[in-house]
Image (tube, rainbow, N blue to C red; front, side, top):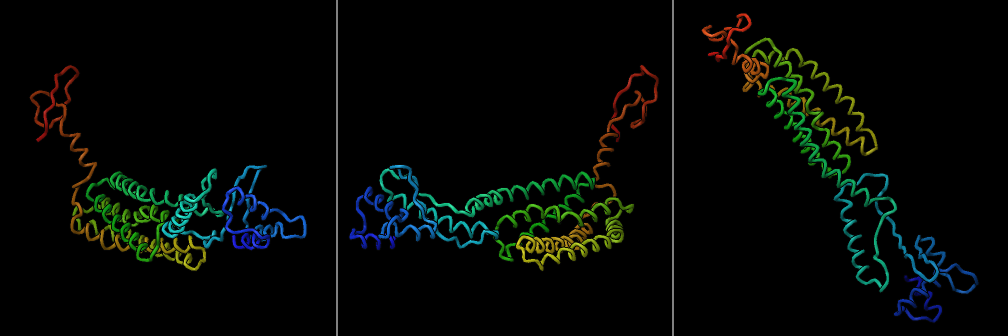
Amino acid sequence: MKDFKSWLNENSLSFPVEDSDDFWEKMHEYLAAPTTDDSTGAGYDYVRRKLTKMGHAGSKRMYFLISSVETFNPTLFYAVPTVRSSHAAANAFETERNADKPDGATDFFVTTSSGLFTSMRMQQAYISSTFSGVLMALGLALGSLVLFIGNLVTAFLAFLSICSVVCCTLGLMVMLGWQIGPIEAICATIVVGFSVDYIVHYALSYTEAPEHTRVGRLTRALVDVGIRVLSGAITTMGASAFLLATRVQFLFKFGVFVLGTVAFSILAANFLFASLMAILGPEGDFGSLSASLRRARNCHKPVEEGAPVGARASSPSGTRKVYIPEA
């Protein structure tokens, strides 16, 4: 606009141009490609270099595009709070320009050539789905623990340990100053799957132990799978440590995430879950789903009339039978 003012002064014209139609006429003349050696079109090359254009179709004005340089690197991931401030400033600029737009002009709007604002909308979708994804994963984990372990008490204690690992991992991300973006959303969604592994090994071994006391079962579980769980944690942490040397932001953060999750998981399995099982672990068939089903199935049995309580029927066909509950 300063160059346009200089051009007006060179042509003995006043600035600002009061009449809107006169303004667009002078702006078209200023932006027109030069055809002579005079100053007509002096702003054409300058404006073209600055990526500023004005389109027209006959006597109809189509658009007026003003470009500015983005301070964001399009090759990097940016968290939503970082982009939101720029998006808010762009919206404020739109509102200000539209409030002073001339009659007949369409609304002014701001966009980015790199798709930064579009990416921000996508990241907001990540954030809104992250919380629901974590809750769904925890619910699925609880159902799977009950189904495959087969003991309600052991499954619930394992679920509490898994929740502690999830909370510690998410807390680590906050302590490191990570803001929610696509990388953090992905990590938060899969953290439940990474937290289950070692705790489930101990829970299954405890449930399948031949001993009947909680101390005997816990000792059996620690002896049978303890070295395997520890070895698995060491190899996983060792493999993910190589990601810390990368310059790609996603790989670096994912390496930190895996290291933190595995470290919290192995600590929770060997200390938190083991302590809970030593204090509250079920003994005998207490909490067992299969034992509960057997009791429910044997609760009522068909017996011959007059037979001892709980006896099975062995009479020929046609004998009248009744159901007598066992004591």
